[in-house]
Every structure is written in structure tokens, then in C-alpha cells.
Image: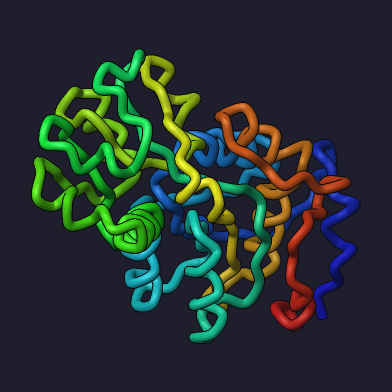
Length: 265
């Protein structure tokens, strides 16, 4: 059986083989791309493990992994992990970051967008993520509940497959406002991010899940632990503007489920 404590003594200077004889396949929400790429580069340098990152909307990736399998899944909303656990696709998970949706606008907020109701104005071009993205599914639910979704649809609006694509619509002035995760604010310094209560009251948790389809549970768990360690992956998430859930030592994290041993028995 796999022993939980085996990860805790691994350190940067340990020359330990984790048995990854082929690349780990990681399905990752597009909004996490920048920190993930830096984490993967650092991990490869330390442990020599190749990691293949597949980006997309959280829902889109979920549909793909049901067919193609893989080793890890990192959506921007824990609900996808919960669904995967219920359907027998996810064996283990660790939540590591909190995400809040915000309205991204041009620096100075020239159209004075302060509320969801402002997005229904005819002079505001709105960009939304498609429901196949975590932020898109969340956005549509909140806008519908707030009674503004129909008004937005009656104006000028567009949809994009990922949260990054929505942000780029605003950056390129193809839209006046877009609903994105607050974690993108560090990547777009020339813009402002308007908080509204309807979103801030319902934060989401970014979570890494180890898939039951993995062919190397030990290597997959090793990377999941590294990703969520306060002095490894979380340090780089913080660098890129993410709100992280701090662990105490490398290899430990809050909100980790207790099924580790069953993966490698």
C-alpha cells in the first residue's frame, strides 16, 4: 500500500525516482496556464519528470478525460471534481486556491460599470465565457439568478471558450466588459477588475484531482503534492496573483481527502 508520509520527506535535493517512465498527462483549466507552466518547468528541473499540459474550459476537459483518461485534472471549480468522484473518475483531490468572478474593464473604467445591471446597457459590449468553462457556467447561473442574463443577450455580447479568451476580448477592445476570475488581474495590469457582491459571496475552489485512469498513481500524487505545497507550487500561484490555501509543510495541504492509500495498493 502507498504510505502517505512517503511524500513528506522528499526535498529539492533528494535524488528520488518516482517512476514516471512516460509523461504525466494533466488536464488544466486555461485560466491557470501561467503558474502551471512555471510549476511544471521547475518540477521537471528538480525531478526530471515530463508533464503534458492540456488546456481548455473545465467542462470541456471533463468531457475529454472521460474518453481519453489521463493522470491529473485541475479545474477552476471544485464541483467538477465532486462530479468526477461521484462518477468514479477522480480518486483523490486537493483544493489549493480560491477564485472569485469579477468584471474586467479598461483602465479608468470609462463606461462606469459598477454592477451586473450595468452589463445590460446598450452601450456596453459584454464578453462571457461559454458554459463549458467553469467561470462560464458560474457566470450564467449568477446572471440568471440576478435577472440580468436576458438583458445582456438583448444587447451586444459575445462568448468565448475560456476565461483567458474573455480577458483577451477586453484587452483587444473587442468588448467593453468581460467576466473573468480575479486571479487574472496580475496578468492584465492595464485593466481594472470590478467586484460585485453576487460573485464575491460565492467563491470557487481550484482543485487538483488524481484520476483513477492514471497508470502511475505514485508519480501523479507526487506532482499533486508538489503543486499544492506552500514552498513549491503555491509560491508560484501567489506570484501570479492567486489566492492560495496555505499548507504547513511541503507535501501537505488543507482540504485534502483521505483516500491516498487506496490509489497504490
